Figure 1 (cartoon, rainbow, N blue to C red):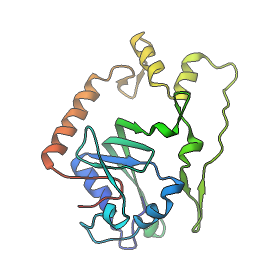
Figure 2: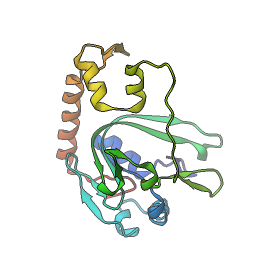
Figure 3: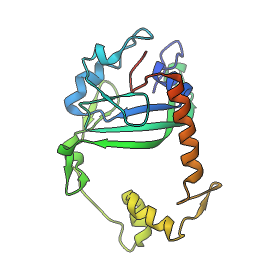
Figure 4: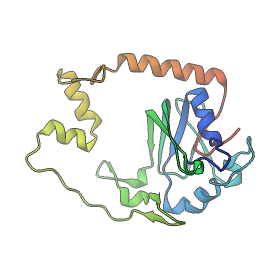
Length: 207
């Protein structure tokens, strides 16, 4: 997220870093006008759900609201905030890295058990005032690649879980893939702290 000319962080960034959880909602072409409305610089505490006339949906694990009309919605635990300094300073960008705790997918964007990206119609911010929308996709597989790597590229949680159970998790950066016990404990602690705070956070939402 970009900062304004005063170098102020977006309220969302400050709140989610403070309480440790947030919701992410896929921005889509049908929601483009409402997404644009939530990009306004509103007063702290002004509810962007009300401003953009968006319906809320309760999250399952975290004290946040999801955007009901978004076809893909994530419940996330905050992990790290990275600042990329800009030149001029107004170009400074903050990046949030998080763990996904729960995923909500609308049935009408599922084809053959997989998310059909062409049905979700996600939008992307380009340069100037331009945006793009994804309506067509295609599939390619790297030739001669072993199954374990292909499963990783596909993002199959079931396949990766199986690899971990078979002892094929490799040490990486001090963590062992396939052994998430410590991570689960840490996330539970984050959820407990967030619930105690009694705060409500969603993408673009302020309290």
